[in-house]
Length: 467
Image (cartoon, rainbow, N blue to C red; front, side, top):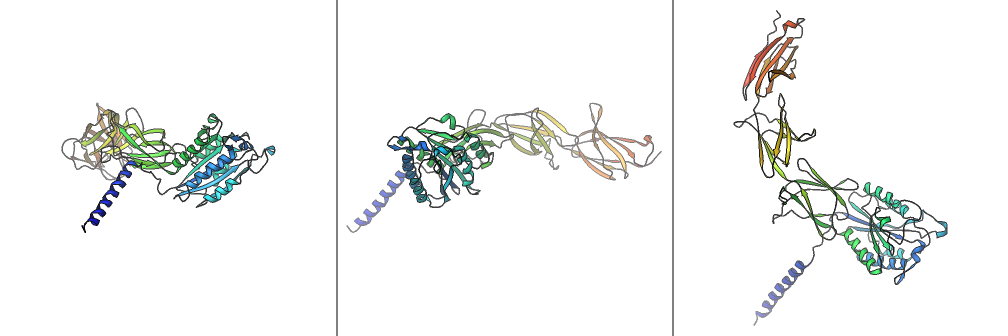
């Protein structure tokens, strides 16, 4: 009987562990944006129309209540700072003051109560300088290299000062000053007016208002997950181990860099990224693939499929293994001038499926066209190993090297003024045309023809004897 308490204790521990694990399995994992400060600026409409009756009270009273409740939920959140700007609350509507906008509570830690107190005292009076409020908001965010600047605008109308909030918002986003703003429209459908300003949400009642504001704040604080599926020619997500760079679509600034990875289940690994940003994604294949304006669905998992079917190109020397110094090969897409890679002989690289032109940087140049890369296959190109020619000649001479192509002599290079010169050349027939610099007679020109074979050295000597 003495062992009963011990058995009971073990049972309780095991049961508690089971319950804990069951709860963990049923809970949705919270994705946090680590090591990055999130700054949320609330811009509240206090123009005269906010005195209007809506649902259970005036619009301003409902806004004050709902926003205060949301601010309470943010109290003590790590890496989150809040600020409050209002407009239309210092001058009468009759004065039509389009500069009636003010940062009431700046960003700081633990200022939630200050914001709530200021909210309670806001009294609607004047106009709706929405554009000027957005413009002024740029200075509300102190300099910060690792911050997410978010604007949440709550209004019951549109700008009545004749300014363009769309242009101002677009400029601020392009500069990277803010992430695309959120706008909550109370009671009226102004989606067409605000769609170029930011993410607009019209709310028709207090329940919608509360839910939407909470949803927006949660999106601002928590990240979302996505995976990039790199599809092959058969639309299967089999490609991997390729760098990916995520840019902000608006500012074009780089945001994330990853190397694509398959997880332990053989699936594209999950990424945690900011859901409030639209992305341009560059897949650094050869050549690179780019998709623009990719949106991540907040609060869910987004799959991003990208066609990047690849094959392998192996370039090697013909015949046995050569100890020749690696020579570069310029790889270009068929018919295009831009070089997408410099690949050395005796190496392999992966390229997108298609046809390519190669320029081998030998002397003379070797051009190979219509080289086809096929999905999950290896295309092997063999390059003849070079040979050497060693040329001895007097100093200060004129000498030029030619190669025989289809019984025509084609220029290869003008030789240096050095007495001894060694040149690596492709196998073939060549000639050197030589004349001493101090000669005044064209007939003193000498020509020597020779042949180059792979991995062999040919020796040529010119004597400076004027006849």
